[in-house]
Image (cartoon, rainbow, N blue to C red; front, side, top):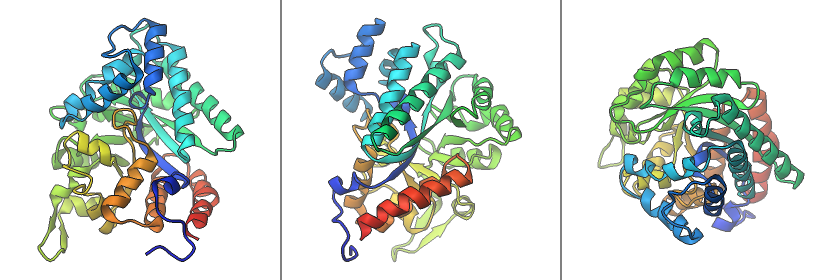
Length: 366
């Protein structure tokens, strides 16, 4: 039951709430109109549609495939139009604009620099263009009274062999907006242990990293990410539910891996809509988010790919409210979970929690 004086929990009111986002792919969040305009500007001729609505429908339909591999196929088109400094800057700038409009106050946006060098750019030039776009977007949003901090994660593709190079890139730009490292792409056949050198390099430099694990592949992927690679967070991690047994009376028993992750407060970057699209879960109502939240795992709410999932942070929160009956205090807890798990410094995290998130939720809760 909502506290006396609190605003009703509606999608419109959720849009007013402050949000923290840890798992969002830059190349998965373009505006359909921007894809069309950049394709014309850069000479990219392989788009499946030339009408904005038809193109938006294509991305939604193609992504809702029930398979992670098929889900990733439409990214060829967004990546295809992100091969120049101007296009990278624009996409990054608009990303900040869109997040700020949804009252996201902190975001870590990830992308794979190695996918954006087909036009001749160096890896460093790619990162510089994206960081400039984020910085300019931040300034513009803040000038309009919308507080937002955006930082970057550089991602290596797990089926390629450039992870060491990308980890070194993360360290080179660590004081310029890059706060961590990630690996992404198809999980099956490409375990995180293939990239141990990169993770060791990050640890040697006292740097943070997350790993996509436990989305399309099960517990072995999660175990390797934590036990062998030392991940600070898990990208998705929904298959941890395979290590939790729930009896008929509702009592949950954790296996050793699940218990370890809960004990160590390993953050889960859960992306409900995306997980349904890739077939990781059957529906939002069947998503293990609620089970993990009730068992006090450190769960966070994320968008993954806003274009492909046709979603926002507000939409993701609203779907969870509809499915599980959450209240404002639950949404605040999930938001603070995300800020606690961010890759910025403790002082920066605490300032956003105490000065931005808690005061704004206090107004909503009443």
